[in-house]
Length: 469
Image 1 (cartoon, rainbow, N blue to C red):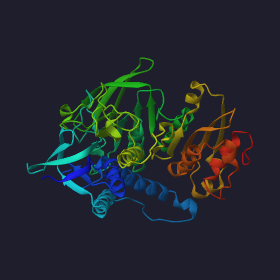
Image 2: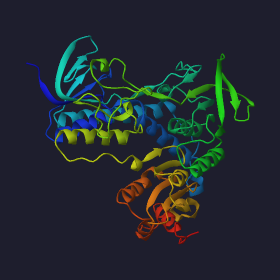
Image 3: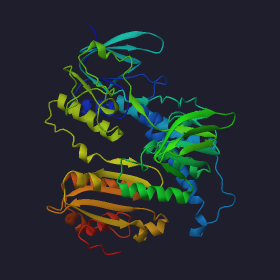
Image 4: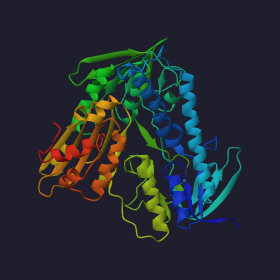
């Protein structure tokens, strides 16, 4: 008789493996299926996304900081970088992370199946290993956590050499002399930051009227200013429609918002737009699971699909495609399966972080969205240029912006661009989770000197009580 599981999870990314650990903690018998040929766990985030990208960003940040060490009285002769070692360290970080996930599975007695998982029907998943062997896993419940893959863009087909996507660019053997980045979302601006700091001439091209378009408009303006100071060119409102590969370069062309012709040429093009849920070959046709016209699995607020006993989390459903959200969705599902009283996730409190330089982080509504929602808005803003600690570390670009509503003083959104923005945001997430008012946040004592004081000062600014500007 086949081994029976309480829950089987297809995909070992931050949604899948976190769900596996929490399921085990809840007393469930858990199976985890991963198709990665190297048998490493961690999914796109751990192997080809968040972790390796941030390892490259850290190297780029340190190199850029070192180029200004003389300002601090520190001398370095012949500053340079070893790209091979940069890539090696990135790979070491990735491998250690993957090993850490494997350790967690063993510690929590999660049965790992290495192979491609296909749903045969409710309660049955077939696993085909790399050598073609098949076995059936029987389970009371199934969680689809297969993540997303790069979406091919017509007219901008990637070859991994001259025209690359977010997977290819992690494995470059050398830093190109010039690069055109198509798309200014998190992927685009993060890689722009990496390669520009290592000496690449970077141009970012965005279809919409501002870069990082999902962020607050003030943040977009500040990032473009900061990029310009670093030598990164930004072109917004530009629609590229053709590409031509030459012997040693690539030409792209299109039109701007005024219908004026645009033509650019660089050694390499990074196509940083478009991902799609990975559902191919998953066997959804054997179930009642519904996929909408955008290619995502339809679920309710508890991540339940139309097929009882089958759930979906992460990049395959219509919620923000963020690793930390996928983890919380996985936890939500397994805790519900374990009989816990769970509440749906508040999507307005999902933090968004971009690790470019300067960093960008936000939670809640932008100023414009708050106004569009009918709130009577009051804003507090505090620049890092007025922060003693920011001056000490030599990173003064950016600000903290707090969006609140006048009637009850509730904080509706927090937007940060500047040093350690992605870490500072956690305070805002806790504050908003507890429905903190701007007054309460401003009255909370923050240690001095720290960059976190900028959050306090921005909150005080909502009531025009900022001290240091």
